Length: 147
Image: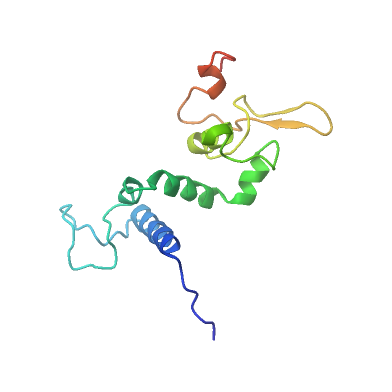
């Protein structure tokens, strides 16, 4: 028999978030009745919608953790030009990889279309398919490039 693992309060919150998101997306959210009123008889969930998790202190971090968990760390590293990069850049700002992950679902390092092979050793990965929305890149807002 396996001994249950004790979860930290942070891990419990992340687990509750994952359960709420999956139930909400699958239409299994039992905390909301048909008329939109909260069902007070269900005490298993303290939130009626996953959005409530993101409104609490640390909500942005929960959102980023949900993105990373959804894509997977190995896939995110494989998306990047340099697997040693991080999704935060200098001064804690988001990197281009995080912006691309947020908007396109891929943590690629560049904003151009497809991939560009510069040499045998160097391939720069860009957006592999046209996203549903457009956006302003970090460098474009500084007028270093135009996308």
